[in-house]
Length: 241
Image (cartoon, rainbow, N blue to C red; front, side, top):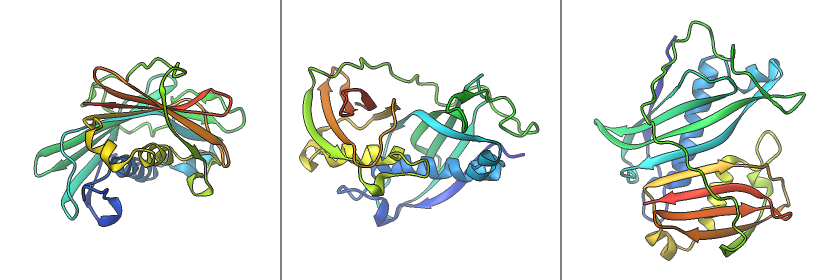
């Protein structure tokens, strides 16, 4: 059984930002979409897992961006899961054009028991005949951020909307990215670091919640946090040069 999925993608206007290039939130949206397509093809899609009393969640995701394609460019996006660990697993992504690597990324995900809300072991999730890679093509580690943003600059607030809600009833992963970027002006986005982008999910948010967004500037880039009304972090965003 094929452990990799590739698809051709045209960078249409709906995927572009003010630079007329594939936007960063839409890059991650394409990662999410191709992962879903591949999971369905492997028999571990949303409906199949629901039948087994499970669902999968993204714990964190990141990408290294070398060049964002412009509108109407044709590119190839591919994905593959790696051999899972006991309760967490990695899925990798590559965005390419005629042999040029435009971006590479990965997500760390887990399988959750629908009845208990607790992680389940990943053993047996994938078909036994599937040959999964053990060596990553994108070995860059996930970051470790200081979760205390109490002294960081507040750059705005965001009220979770109905259009942000996903099938599990909480804020969709990509909606967080769009919220972060929506609070940054075009002028700020011109100077913000865009080489590395990483999102770390800590707590779910629900319709109507007010998120406060804070930012601190480091030697390597920007770190942002969306804080819930109780002050607890919901999600972190790391932008590197």
